[in-house]
Length: 530
Image (cartoon, rainbow, N blue to C red):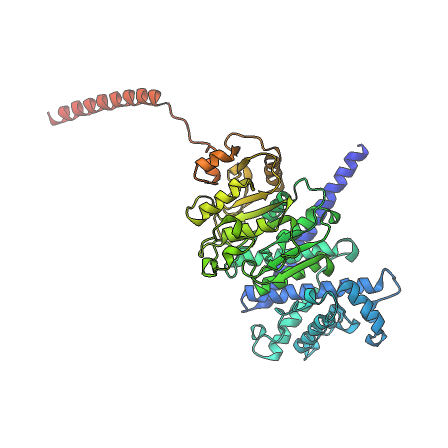
């Protein structure tokens, strides 16, 4: 066996080991989440499990930083009074926050079962960690991180004793989890565990507050589309960031140096906004490399001074209501004015699209998950499509399989926008067929092979019968600016072909046989009657 074969075999074994470890870890976390929550609703209780995971992560991450690889130092065993103001100041400038030894997860977890003040002690620690960043550049990234981890909440129990019992059970459960060697794999495993819990709760709850969560494989495809053939991007942006999964996929699949200035996003839901910020830390993105803002992207966009962005990824809420034309100032907004019309009040989909386009650089791409209806409906949406096509901003429209998303069977589309197209054609890809998904329980799933095939089609821009076709924008204009994939990619009829001539011959023979059979039966009946 040659050296390459040995290396490939080792890689395969490592991947299998990693997969098994991750699966085991996920099962344990899910067990904690379900066993401990009792009568508490799973969607509500997830905050306590996720918050505890995050607490352990930042504790160990901070300890590792303070020890700086010196095996003789065990930060957790040091007395708090050894920390000088200079040490604290320096640590906050680097890490963005400070945790005293007594405040570390491992020290709190040790006495959790016997601590009668556990819930209030935890609240004091979380308040202290957040307040440590006040006055520092990291203040906005740390502020309110633990807001949804309310240790005094009645959701944990009606008495202090019940609250503490449940909190202790979560702390001890998370304490027992084996994340392996911190420096080697802890960051990834923590992050994956975190995303696993979020997606599992999403799968079981369907959606929360009208928000559909983006499956990891769809996130992977979107990240690759937005980053395609870019050797580096200035920064990446998601105007409807959710829990940050789309941004994190870009980090996972591209070297850090490719994304030069970091990760930007805005999220309207406060809980999800906190999850996104936690998720950044969990994937070892330091406070100075991300900026997640809270607020309504359409009404109060936060990053106008940071645009343009070389890569934009997004799965905005489908057909959500917004103020639209009820606010007469919006038609003059730089994002919407060029189209000359606002997205309908009942369907804000194109408002997010126009927002993304406005924030996109001249060399970048935006990949946006869209509800199919926006590609063929009339009225304002047709006018916006006209603007996009006439200005040659639409690079590709991809139709995905149904049942990819938790809580909805809708076969969504991905809209890819570009300001640097080499021609005046628009590509349409029908990736909705059985060749582009794997059936998994109640949902369909994109595999890495499916993603690779879609990316190949996207890259080559070649016509493939029944799958991909590039259409000149003049033809799209003649077709009333319809951007539905089915309008341009011929549907493959897989039904059995029937030869009508041959069928008629067979029917004629069958009819003759039936007639003869009837005659025979009539003759028998006559004989019996006689």
